[in-house]
Amino acid sequence: MNCSLRCAEEGADSIRVELADRRKATRLELRKRFKHFQSTGALPTDADVDVLARYVLTVAWGMAVEAQSGASRSDLHRTVKQALASWPT
Image 1 (spheres, one colour):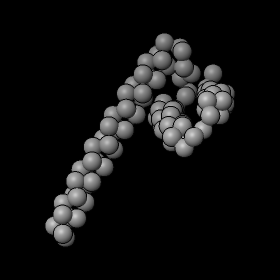
Image 2 (cartoon, one colour):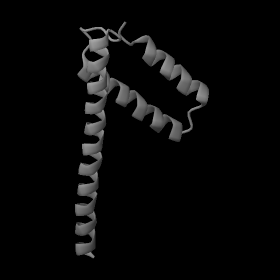
Image 3 (cartoon, helix red, strand yellow):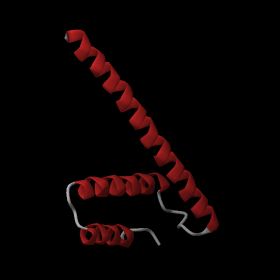
Protein backbone atom coordinates (compact mmCIF):
# COMPACT_ATOMS: atom_id res chain seq x y z
CA MET A 1 0.00 0.00 0.00
CA ASN A 2 2.79 2.46 0.80
CA CYS A 3 4.29 1.84 -2.64
CA SER A 4 0.95 2.60 -4.28
CA LEU A 5 0.65 5.85 -2.38
CA ARG A 6 4.22 6.83 -3.17
CA CYS A 7 3.75 6.01 -6.86
CA ALA A 8 0.52 7.99 -6.94
CA GLU A 9 2.28 10.96 -5.37
CA GLU A 10 5.08 10.72 -7.94
CA GLY A 11 2.50 10.66 -10.71
CA ALA A 12 0.78 13.68 -9.21
CA ASP A 13 4.08 15.56 -9.24
CA SER A 14 4.60 14.91 -12.94
CA ILE A 15 1.04 16.03 -13.67
CA ARG A 16 1.57 19.16 -11.59
CA VAL A 17 4.76 19.93 -13.53
CA GLU A 18 3.06 19.31 -16.88
CA LEU A 19 0.17 21.62 -15.99
CA ALA A 20 2.56 24.32 -14.78
CA ASP A 21 4.53 24.03 -18.03
CA ARG A 22 1.34 24.41 -20.07
CA ARG A 23 0.24 27.44 -18.06
CA LYS A 24 3.66 29.01 -18.59
CA ALA A 25 3.54 28.32 -22.34
CA THR A 26 0.10 29.93 -22.54
CA ARG A 27 1.33 32.97 -20.60
CA LEU A 28 4.39 33.33 -22.84
CA GLU A 29 2.24 33.09 -25.97
CA LEU A 30 -0.05 35.83 -24.66
CA ARG A 31 2.99 37.95 -23.84
CA LYS A 32 4.25 37.47 -27.39
CA ARG A 33 0.91 38.55 -28.83
CA PHE A 34 0.77 41.59 -26.56
CA LYS A 35 4.28 42.58 -27.74
CA HIS A 36 3.00 42.33 -31.31
CA PHE A 37 0.01 44.52 -30.44
CA GLN A 38 2.41 47.08 -28.98
CA SER A 39 4.37 47.13 -32.24
CA THR A 40 1.18 47.83 -34.21
CA GLY A 41 -0.03 50.54 -31.85
CA ALA A 42 -3.02 48.51 -30.67
CA LEU A 43 -1.56 48.41 -27.16
CA PRO A 44 0.33 51.26 -25.47
CA THR A 45 4.10 50.86 -25.56
CA ASP A 46 4.31 51.48 -21.81
CA ALA A 47 1.92 48.59 -21.02
CA ASP A 48 3.60 45.82 -19.03
CA VAL A 49 3.00 42.79 -21.25
CA ASP A 50 4.14 40.34 -18.57
CA VAL A 51 1.62 41.70 -16.08
CA LEU A 52 -1.12 41.81 -18.72
CA ALA A 53 -0.55 38.17 -19.66
CA ARG A 54 -0.72 37.08 -16.03
CA TYR A 55 -3.77 39.27 -15.46
CA VAL A 56 -5.72 37.84 -18.40
CA LEU A 57 -4.97 34.27 -17.37
CA THR A 58 -5.75 34.92 -13.72
CA VAL A 59 -9.13 36.40 -14.64
CA ALA A 60 -9.87 33.56 -17.08
CA TRP A 61 -8.93 30.80 -14.63
CA GLY A 62 -10.76 32.53 -11.80
CA MET A 63 -13.85 32.80 -13.95
CA ALA A 64 -13.61 29.10 -14.77
CA VAL A 65 -13.59 28.31 -11.06
CA GLU A 66 -16.51 30.68 -10.49
CA ALA A 67 -18.48 29.07 -13.33
CA GLN A 68 -17.87 25.61 -11.89
CA SER A 69 -19.04 26.91 -8.53
CA GLY A 70 -22.34 28.07 -9.99
CA ALA A 71 -21.77 31.71 -10.93
CA SER A 72 -24.45 33.00 -13.26
CA ARG A 73 -23.80 34.21 -16.79
CA SER A 74 -24.67 37.68 -15.62
CA ASP A 75 -22.06 37.51 -12.85
CA LEU A 76 -19.41 36.33 -15.32
CA HIS A 77 -20.30 39.06 -17.82
CA ARG A 78 -19.99 41.68 -15.08
CA THR A 79 -16.57 40.26 -14.21
CA VAL A 80 -15.46 40.58 -17.84
CA LYS A 81 -16.80 44.13 -17.97
CA GLN A 82 -14.77 45.05 -14.88
CA ALA A 83 -11.64 43.39 -16.25
CA LEU A 84 -11.96 45.26 -19.54
CA ALA A 85 -12.46 48.55 -17.69
CA SER A 86 -8.98 48.16 -16.24
CA TRP A 87 -7.37 47.47 -19.64
CA PRO A 88 -4.70 49.99 -20.71
CA THR A 89 -5.72 52.42 -23.44
